[in-house]
Image (cartoon, rainbow, N blue to C red; front, side, top):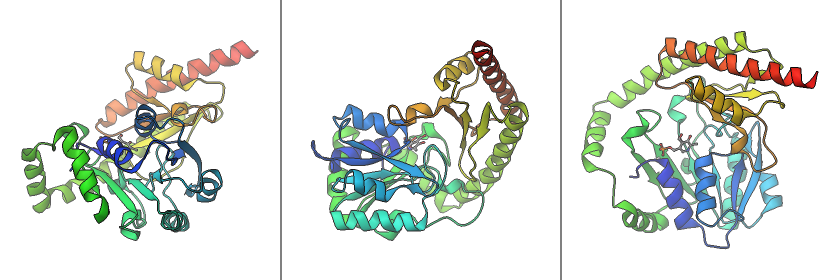
Length: 305
Ligand SMILES: Cc1ncc(COP(=O)(O)O)c(C=O)c1O
């Protein structure tokens, strides 16, 4: 058990990577991962592998760093873009890991929240000897619970447990017992079924509101069908970090997409979370955000004219 996936990412970097090891990281990727690698001496050993509509481009990874020690990926739903990794990419990634004696870290942060169709099998299920699976209760329950888990190959369990104990021993046992009891009684499953409908509804509402208020050449939504956030792309002339600051002043909290890309490769956009808010709050937030983006787009256009 961990205090969440963030700790799982940190532990994985500690246990799996030596000082000179290269590691594949998706481009774009979760800032919580790239910041961990930067802060633990792996800034230059990160190999930022592009993603396309099928997830990480394994052939590109092989061209860039064939003997990397491993890969950090978000196969259920690429973070932040949202598409699942295709079956052929899953197989290719695992074949590379097996042939290279490398590890794959599977950050599965919200696959419980898929709205349509059947999920692909996890990488961990496909190859339990090569994959370290990171799960969390942050999305399906709530982030301040700080409970997550690592499923590690047998050979790595001692190393992970040892590193975990050195950090802070373990997360509170009382919370784990309560959670285990509620899972045993079927409450978690029922909760997931219920929130899945709520979030699907919130997602549709947010998409409808933003699409109605933002012209297509100013902002457009990345398609997807799962999770608790979506990506709103912005026209190239709009600085997403400025939008984040202005939106915060208007009382709306959003994150920039450009900072999830390797330096020099990013596009402007926003990560919009829609978990934990009422329909009314979402509508108000969408209006305020659209006002900020439209104002900025108009001022950019006026400056160019
Ligand atoms: C892609 C991704 N990985 C990991 C995490 C960290 O989750 P946790 O709250 O379990 O530490 C998040 C949280 O937003 C996330 O989006």
